[in-house]
Length: 54
Length: 412
Image 1 (cartoon, helix red, strand yellow):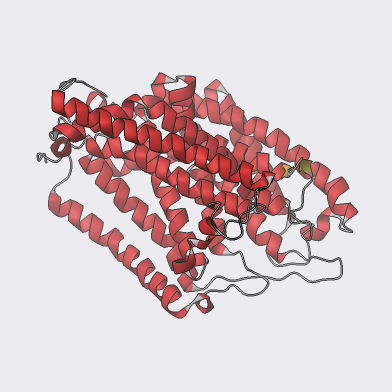
Image 2: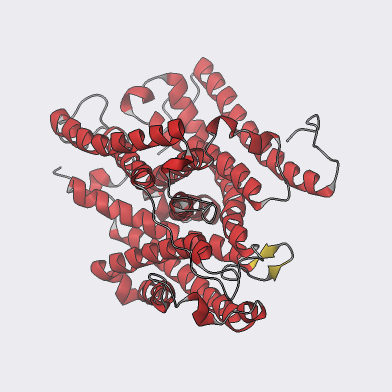
């Protein structure tokens, strides 16, 4: 899972497999981080306080 | 009754009635929890599994709920990526059903691995050449995506929605939901496929082995396609059941019909591919391993040719033709019958690809090897059903899951 784990090898299988995993995790992490920071900002400024989302 | 925690404009049963309902389902849940405790405390000797059956009832349940939970990723794909706005009226419920299916799958896996405390090994010491490792990764990450998709629905509870930060968080999650939905589609494509791939790459088991494209056997693509085809049918089926239990119309018929039409065409194309795959396997692949087709359907007490006909014709072609016809979709009974048949068909397919694979002889001179699950396996397989009913009951009571409910039940 990480390059510092003893069985890690810098081969194509590890790069493709783990690359795809970390790519997906990065997108999810970035999306969540954006939502949390934007929500904190919106709460502080009360921007869009009456926004309807459904 | 209405309370501040119940969404505005809808009525729910009394707290007493709701508590009795939860207690009844909770009793079944506790039975499953007791069996789960036995399996974890005493070990896998509580199951009917043995050296011949490393995969058994639990893995069938896993594959079935993951396929049926495919309604979440495919409905999300149609709603957020393709832009089918009508499906916004059912997407919340599709997400909740998907969440239940995937959390159930993970729970069952936690039982099946025997030593759940070592479950993290598959992530930490990943075997990158294993389809099951890929399944474990995508399954876990996709469950995370489903949780993220579920959060805004929970945050719309009237009490939570009054908290400004949670209100904004719910709004902002909705705004970027397409990104999560797209990630979910990517993850689902691979784990649904790899579950099929596991059976297809078993070159020592002539019943399941398939040729394919590069490293992916045809079963990889068939599993993904079938999950996308039948997942929405399961979503509609559960929605219809919820309507019957609550005595309310929750989603407009046009939404059911749209999902039925999409599922019908998906199912028909899947069946064409599946029949072609079965034909090639029967006349080329299996004979090359020394087997004739009927070797896999005779000389045993359960697996006759009926199972192939049931999967491909009765629960495959028949529902597909009903769903692609306008008259079939407009007749509510036919629509639901077709969807139930499709759901049964996919469960038969997963059963065959797990349990018949294990039962069938490996060499032409070998005998069939049958398996009977123990009550502990049955109880722990029913456990997720009880858990699902409880979660659905709570979600329906306290969350605004169905945007059309108020409009469809004006008098309540």
